[in-house]
Length: 72
Image 1 (tube, one colour):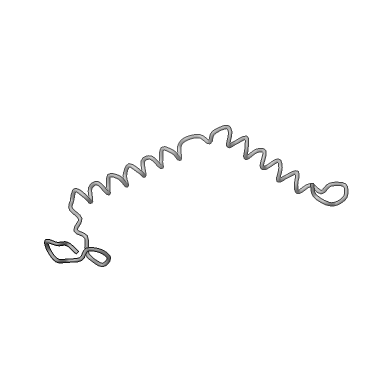
Image 2: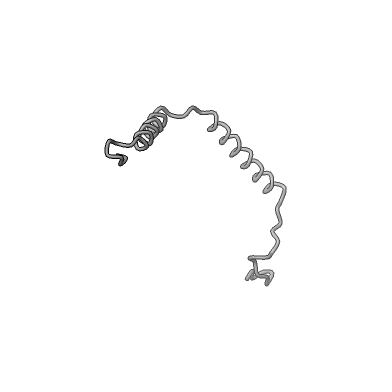
């Protein structure tokens, strides 16, 4: 309970947003979108490409039946 006003804060109480607070939220959102877009433009690291290639090879090898008819 707020001792000065005698009111409880919490769920259901409206929050007053100042123009400054709303501007900061918009600024953060804009910055996060810009960061995400820049990450989308970066090339995939060679290490990940090699790992994906090995995974594809392992999956292909698992689908080829062995002489006994049981996959390796």
